Image (tube, rainbow, N blue to C red):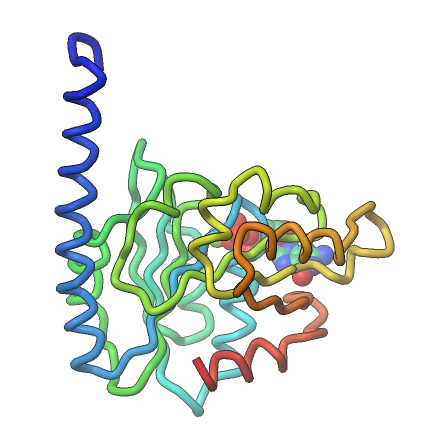
Length: 219
Ligand SMILES: Nc1nc2c(ncn2[C@@H]2O[C@H](COP(=O)(O)OP(=O)(O)O)[C@@H](O)[C@H]2O)c(=O)[nH]1
Ligand SMILES: [Mg+2]
């Protein structure tokens, strides 16, 4: 912002984050009141968040009520994909914004028909930087990294992997075709977050999906 000094910029940024944190705490109260497990799915574009969500929702059908909030800069295509599974979804378009914030999630939550004891999945805007700083009131952030993205991503974007409870390595079906050192990737993630849990899966073949469903059941 031209005309503003470094100090003023930092003050504005701290104010924005403080307001967001207050609203995230408010969201948490709402989620607790309906016993929702709320997960914030973060990744770069194309790692397979929507594909994984659709496959997960199909497998949870009849077992646990689910709802989805979709974040993208433009289009409602991801929410449309989710609705083909029969699960209610709200699309938020952030325009030039690079992440969802707690206010957007709050407003969307109140439009969703959530049921007691369900899971609310939030698919954040695809990038490994901005969503790391914005608490939405979720219980956990789940970082999804696909086998085509390179094993050094946790070191390049440490804030995101430090904030995540779980790292999903997706597209394992492609491992025979790409140079991606899974062990190295896990090592890198643990360097920035020694407590991070890891699940390897392929959303398209279904390999490893059981581990993810078990994780959801105990989260
Ligand atoms: N081979 C393979 N492709 C996948 C897998 N998961 C997603 N994709 C593909 O990756 C592309 C991006 O997926 P999408 O779910 O839209 O990613 P998002 O941007 O993170 O929501 C699509 O072409 C998917 O079909 C997977 O496990 N294996
Ligand atoms: Mg998507």
